[in-house]
Length: 417
Image (tube, rainbow, N blue to C red):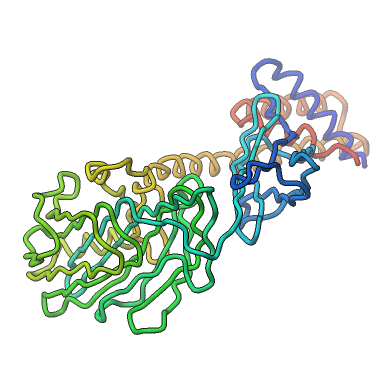
């Protein structure tokens, strides 16, 4: 108990010495808002909400239930306004999410719109699509991206256990992986289910009103330097772009028209439009794929590099999504390229903070040990005060280097409960 009390005194002293040099990070907050049914326009009563925090996986940290007017409130002194939270509502077996952003007062207004679910396919079409074929050694890597628009009126979420997105791959295709661009363009890997016939597959992800970006990737055999591409999807496609690399490969197709080269990838570019559903997207690709250093670089890219998908799809007519900044490169997943430097910065900051935390903890322990030695009469008063002031000066200097949240945590973490 003595050490705990001494920690409080030391922390308070440090905060006083720092004065205006550091501003404490707010702790605790209040989240409020309303849940509205976007199909009917009415508030949703008795809707359970989960507050999630991505800490070793999405962890539920709080819950709430809406009142008769669809309103809710979540308050807690344990909220960290600098952390990322996600609010979730599960309505008719469909998950809806909204990010939580606190203001300077620790307040967050978060509204969620949910929709009635329908198992009858609404008007759905693919507004824009892109297929990338990259021949590397004895493999051809195929990445397919589809901007799927659900234009149901009134708006409804399309759910179907037999699949909301159906596609067919050529017989030479390997096992496909898939992902959906979720909130903030974060990739959500999706199970790929085999259909009734060979080459048929389906994904059960609910197609909510508006746009959903679906991505499929697989490897195909290219040992004979030839690929007979013949995939298809169950929805009509307004605009479709095919990119082939290396650009020296020959493409024989009566379906696609040559459109020069893609300025951002250097690949050969082919386009078509107004494609009916279940149409075979046929193209015969031949020629020597990337070999030697080029193949090694391509393999390294596939395994380790985060790339930005070219945005030239915006030229295909219609607004193209920022979601197409995603690319399927890492096996089951994709990443948002522009978040890479931010992630690296967070990693560096995290390592620095860990080092500072260790130093602060060491100095706190040294102060507490010194106090106990003095209380036991094992050190004279004059050297005790001299050493104590030196330790406190080092502690203050260390805390000045630390982020405000670290200072706050040490100011309150040892408070008796």
